[in-house]
Length: 274
Length: 311
Image 1 (spheres, each protein chain N blue to C red):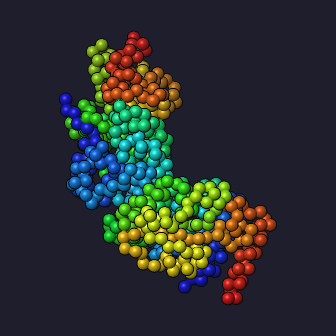
Image 2 (spheres, each protein chain N blue to C red; image 1 turned 90 degrees about the vertical axis):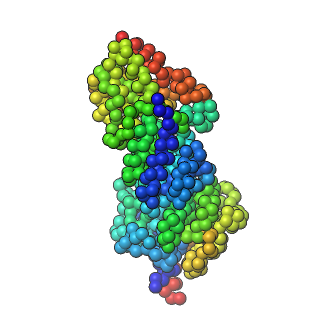
């Protein structure tokens, strides 16, 4: 059994390394959803890096594609790619670009344009129903992304087709590039919106990895897709980046990098002493 | 002359193919009537997916289905599919390389009287600039059938435009040798070449008959595939004939004519290229034939251009 909290801290360190060395990346967005990816990849999803095209594997579509660094770090740690390859992130010609790229094993579909992932996941879940397959489809959306109208087209269709084999996770960190999501474009009452669209809604602390995992393991309600609103902290784990919209895609300088790694190491040490 | 709408042939061919392959699914956006797919829905209800009036969603869902082993055909009006859904086409279909067939129905000025919102006169321009996307426009019912037989077997993303209204035959019989990316020489000649696509192939054939009566030797190329483009046939026409006239139910910008001109201009001894299509304006409304005549997609205009250039 993987120590999920420890794993999430190690992945955060990988993310900071990648962004610091490539001088590009979405620091705040990555750190906010790190616990979500770790819960999915280390505790919830049925996936096998040795058999990435297994027809019965669970599917993951990262609709908030800009949080690519954390995705690459997880795929490397799981063994879909060599860890060494992370050093090529954002380099000329690298497959590890700033958005998910399906030339890499483990990535189902290319994303990056917001508002596509839920509809893609709906198609994948619909195919499972048509073929009587038991795999589950997960998709991760940002909260700023919810202003895209196509999200709600997908939400309508998933409920219409009663896709209880589909879970949408909202990374509800409350911030986007311009500032507070509620100031940029109000999405509240969020839970009621999804309920009104016919979804089963669960709210959870998205940085409490065990609570999150527990919710993800729950049996879905018959005939209803599940929406998990994961309340998260943007930039989670590094004090200077926490709840700071400016860190959406800011790259740490040397001093900030040193501090970030030191903070994560301290958390790892504290965890070891628990 | 037999007049059958290409969309009706699409439906018959898809029913036939879907019976043989359960993975074929058809998606509509409240468009099964306008796509002539009611018969498909009745024949193959489990292979029909209704998405409602949501053209972005229909393309992404189709991409998800294709990623899971289905062979989706999305049938939605060309004006919406090629504009509102273009980002989904670019990213979810072409970039992710999902085997989705995008069928733009009632293309060009098929919805003649409904105005610019319903005309699709930019779809060639947009789709041909997207890598990993074939662009195909069949001319008549025989070619439509051949195209859909091909699509049912092909694993590549494609955009196909069909007109709404019945069209006169361009071929005499069923095609057994349809090849994507290869222009069909409908008539051979050495003075002038008419290169047409879709419903303008019939216009070109009629003009050729008239010109030949005047003693001219006219080549007619049916460029059913805009992408990949048959560059060889174009270069050959540019060197063997003195003038090329392109005909398309599309903006004069960035469509078939532009694609032909791009090839000819890279060739040292190219013929002149005259592009016929819809002017850069909200197109006049009316019936297809009236609109074609208005913009010079007509025998009269072609005769005049040939006279000015060659005689």
